[in-house]
Length: 124
Length: 124
DNA sequence: ACTGACAGTATTATTTTTCATACTGGTATG
DNA sequence: CATACCAGTATGAAAAATAATACTGTCAGT
Image (tube, rainbow over all chains, first blue to last red; front, side, top):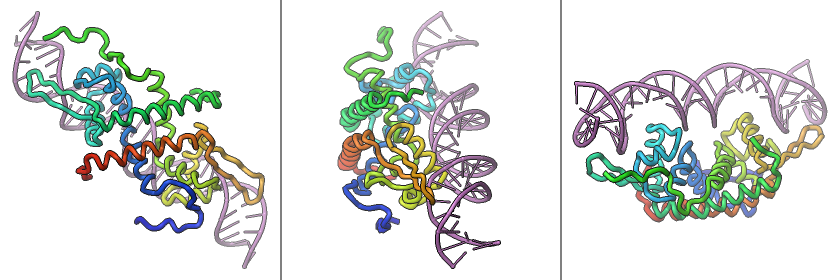
């Protein structure tokens, strides 16, 4: 693998490197998932426990909530803290990494908004 | 047993608005797809025709290439130009909108890279 | 006449993702 | 005793995304 992109059909101008492409692809993968963005969004308001998250995300199943939380945790976007109490309490919070993502979120949202103004005739 | 935080399970602090959330979700959807990022990436180098794209993306099928191109076109990220020639020639190019997305791409890639440095102990 | 390039479409698998339910154990409440 | 809350698991079904393969029509070259 990792063969040099020697084919003449891809002129190498000022495009970002393949490495950069992969970084980007990873970053996008981290936030793709039916509920990931929603989860990050509600967690922006502050740490929450499992049940709160579930109630804050109408329509999500426990299964999916758990799965997406685990994925976000694995990617270092959220931190899970389990307190040894009765009844059990588990809190989820954004990590600094996730917070650093916020301005990019906003930039992307801005971009999407400007798109609309550009040629607004596309509505689903 | 405290009284729970009564009504609003979603405290509205400084979080971006729901509208902003939707904008963002849309923006992410536009670039989620097995090949979309790759397509945008190769198109950064300049306009290309269908066959060139296919060769530049090893492993993609014509079906998927067509589908993803159509989706990107519908979202206003690429422009399709068909020349009435023989043999047929169809060129795909990034739109200004897509180019405006580039700095955000880069910001996201930077973020992903800094993530790695932060806690590099994540092995697959 | 046969083959290949061009830019696709059509049809059918296969894989991945998401949804719908039911279940766990400990405790507190009715 | 029956119920519900807590934070999840387990299992199977449905839906969506992706892949594999074959086919369209025109023309140029052989």
